[in-house]
Length: 252
Image (tube, rainbow, N blue to C red; front, side):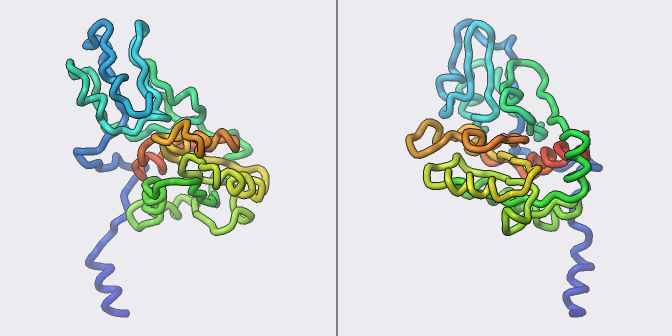
């Protein structure tokens, strides 16, 4: 026991200061993709042609990026002959609606908080049931990381529970495969009302690289209503945490 206490004292405080301080992100972090439209050549569609999920559209109106489909793979950046496409360190990507994930050159909005009554119900204590609806374990791993001492999700009153009957909402990962559609429906129905649904990752938002496969339903909102979309492949834990706190009105 004494050894354990000494080890803890030597380790010191490991929980990050977020949201009270700016997080430290690695140099290779891939955040919000941006396009300098002034550098784009007339008729160039190099970025759109290499995108594996058709997340980019380029026409006479400019370049549009659908963050809900984007895998943040950097194929577009590498293919751009003029260096117009870049990835920034912006990690605050979550949105309340699917349409807000489509970038057309304007500044990305921040996710809006729930209404006053929902914030009163969930703002200080939110229990979530995580459902992997055919995911590859990438998003699931980053969701699990939120429970470590570094992010310490519990300090915000947010916890994952084992039963949907004990939950206030669902956190869904994966593209919703045919085998998981009924299970997701039943899990959603088992959560008492009012309830929230959070879609995490490109697969849960749009089907990701599996989009339009015959065994995939192209994301959670094809089966249940979604209150928060968190893009990424997988999203960084800070992106997920930022979205959750904005949804609850804990940060603005």
